[in-house]
Image (tube, rainbow, N blue to C red; front, side):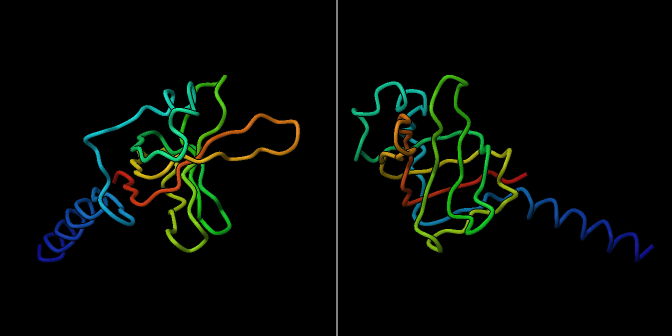
Length: 130
């Protein structure tokens, strides 16, 4: 009986811990969220501006874990959250979870002959728990 009680306690504790969001940097400003679609529709209006975005994480850098991409519509360019290597290390488990990020919108060059994409250089990131 004692073993069952201990096992249940550990299971409940791990569920509570798993539900906690993972945070990096300052506090995310969830009061003023800007839709990624709005940024991509009129990027010049947002360049070098501080915004907060929210979206589903669709990819995470597998080398330095220094960027995450957020879901965009099929006809829109990609949008990522990018930090200098080592400043924030995004977990690979973030893929499929909701992320909030506050930071500055920048151009993300895609190479010669390709249209630019856009990225957010964050000061704060929060990845939702389980």
